[in-house]
Image (cartoon, rainbow, N blue to C red; front, side):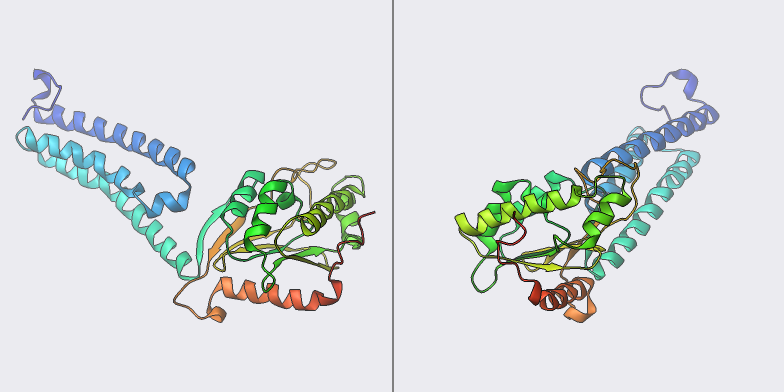
Length: 296
């Protein structure tokens, strides 16, 4: 047979197989590059759960189709095609199994570096209920309009927006800043600025919001919305660059959780974290903020 776009010198079977081998090696390299670029662009979870595997298998199948259309494919070509498809098939099956395992417990994704834009997007997508466990909610209140609009949508008299924050007088605020080589009042100042914005929303805009404080060192960041979505992140005590707040514009990686509809609350990670928040919220009853203290 004659391969498409080849000359007479390629009609010899040995040359055909050499030519096919070169094509398939180049094809695998190109496909690998496309795979990596698209996975970075749309996110690994959406890519693997969607059409990503097709990108690995369609090009070899297309080559095979052209060869057959031209008059048949030599045995060597068929073997090379099968071998070229094996890595894609194995990889897609492995990825699919991992995703099934993660989704079974409610893990639907992860964010490598949640930045201010990601927080804004989370706020704009919250429409029914909002709870937050963190330090000072500074990344939430930084976009005042988005935060205020979320409170107006989600905060009701029976179910206010709940913010469980580190107490402005907790020792960790100064210790944590000093450990990172920052001025010991750095975190405290950001905390106070955030509380001022929250007080402004409470006094000047619609929507119910309640703030409570805890004294312990923060370890987890939890952000719930709509009764079925949660961001799970963590805080770190070390600094990559002492004297610089590398978390000014971003946070540590976080896991995105969805409440599974087919599992009891105590059999899912989302339910366990929601229960943890509710327990901490109840314990912090005595730390309920009056929207006046700490603002001077």
